[in-house]
Length: 148
Image (cartoon, rainbow, N blue to C red; front, side, top):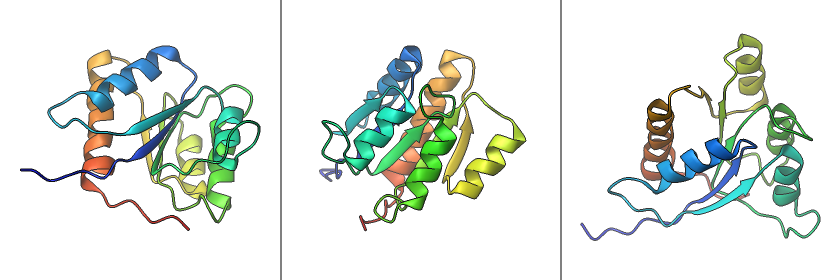
């Protein structure tokens, strides 16, 4: 089983330090050790600066974005809309990972182009399972789109 995995660049947009830590642990955990490069943006403005190369960022094109909705500075819904309206970024799969289970949020995110909408579980063990499922599907199992 000497197959090599292509490293996947992941942008995690999350303001809760505990959720960042759990997500990182879940992505690194398991029998499959991935060589992912994980970048963390702590608010929506930082995520847009990273993606659009503003400030001291050169522009970054991850293969996958994990996006919380309830973010300081720029809301995650607006971040999603800006990503999906940009020709260079719109193909990047965006997994919305949030505490909101409001129908309006689900509908708005899918209308804006979200690839998946997942409500964060409350229990730690369930949260880890969700992130591992994302890893299995999007990083190990799926074929990510080429850059535009």
